[in-house]
Length: 299
Image (cartoon, rainbow, N blue to C red):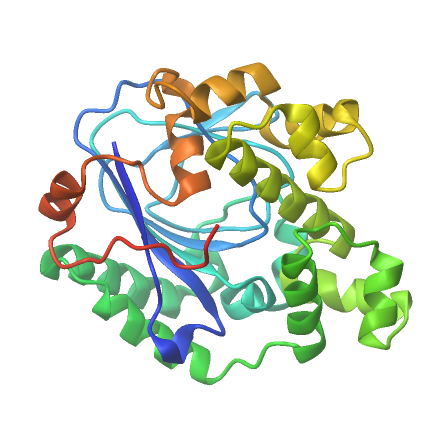
């Protein structure tokens, strides 16, 4: 498996966090896990479409081009053939770029992009195939420049997202509203409309991501890391880890440390946490050629 993230050009940084590429010519077929990160994504599955394991117990094939809306729990995907996915991770306040007013109702779903905007879906598919053919993200960047030209994010919500990101989610929503100079009755519906989840849900996701990054980068135990990121105690952190990742802390730590490829079901989750599958740089360059492999947002 080779996963890497690529930063957007300056003109798209307000709207896009990164473009990512996932390739695996010979996947082992184990269901893989991805954790919520507070961002919606535009997805192109150019290989064999992955199977999505829903919370309802049903298994269904992904669409070749889809919109991954906000998720409030772990996403489980299973490969049945060669994997080649390209994703565009949208900035939180630009989550409605394609979905529009339908965004809040799409939580925990990944609808076919053609059901949201058939014209854009066609152009997105063509650009994704062009990226694969040229081994460059430029075709998708050009498409997104045009799409973003007619879209203006809610500046109040951009500020709210920036504050929550800066605090790694460790900020009460009442305090957030006060800092923004607005009321909760204004903030909460506007945040939901723009981001696709409530400010409290977004704060919990950002705090979870900060906890995961600390556990990945340092030799800290759960209790120390939890205290650092504002959890009241280890039990609270464990509850959030189970709720949002579906994984016990012990298993998560095994996936993030030591033999990082030892737990097959969590390889993709660990790769998303650090923005790369941590494979040798020479192999990454050989796979993606001109596509850069540095991080986009430090997460």
